[in-house]
Length: 436
Image (cartoon, rainbow, N blue to C red):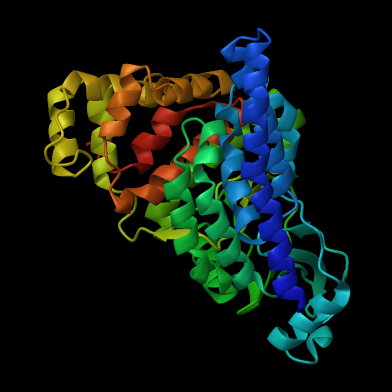
């Protein structure tokens, strides 16, 4: 058996342990109930242990499973605190950790992509990876003109791994949904799968990065490293330094938290109108805060093309919810297919569902906290509550799915940062339809 198929089998075997482990805990839970423990105690214990196993397994994987883990990691802030603590560190590790490729494999890929004389293009090349990503790893080097660069090298067989992992993970979407209230897991997986082919070609990523770098060139708030060279499975870009947002989340000062949150919100809302693209991979591993106060953004493999900026409909919808215009809001949702034909909903119910989501825009600044996001997740995730029933009656048109996921992901990072952000002024400036 070759190396790649063998690894694919090993990944499948690891993933297959997840439902087995859950089944075992369910049986154990029945026993605990018989011994007198309450259903709430048993459910909390099962959920926490399931979460630990899910992320322990995902943390050992590359390809689609690791990318899925990274995508889920931004929703960590929505998990109740008593359940989040045991695996918060495991989630953070998913954003950067993966077993490295052997040096000979790295050199082989570089030779295939940059030519047999690839080493002559560098003054220095560090064989030890500086970081890892879902489908590749990053090496620090010095380009022939003296610039420090980051060299991103794709794992051989990444395409097979991605397809195999995502196929398996789609089978377990309900399991992961149970430990991530408020996250739309299956559509997230399907959307990630649909973008795999595009992300596997680093030339597309390089083109996206060039577009962002040009749009933010000389910006006072955001720095995007320039691309130096690119090939289908290798991209070389300028090296940047900064404090990872994961570090700020863990131990940052109040000033760092607020500044990082403000810069991230500005980048998220301004990028579509400035570049025609939306950075669609929001997790703390893709952003750093520099000593100069600028946000550093990296990894542009996943981007949504929005040539006209963010959709005006979203801005109008947000404004109507803020102004509590329930009938107008209901009419807009129907006309834009957020409500399926034949579905009966009351305007007040829709307003009650959407109103709390726009709470960050009611005041000049808003303090994003885990407690606030946990409250939102509980409100829409508890099947016994009216807002949950309303949410299940609403539809998310496909063209809004990625924007919704990215905005939710960015909000999750703001809550992990515990950042106070002038969200209203940022949205008013960059979201069409909000301040018309």
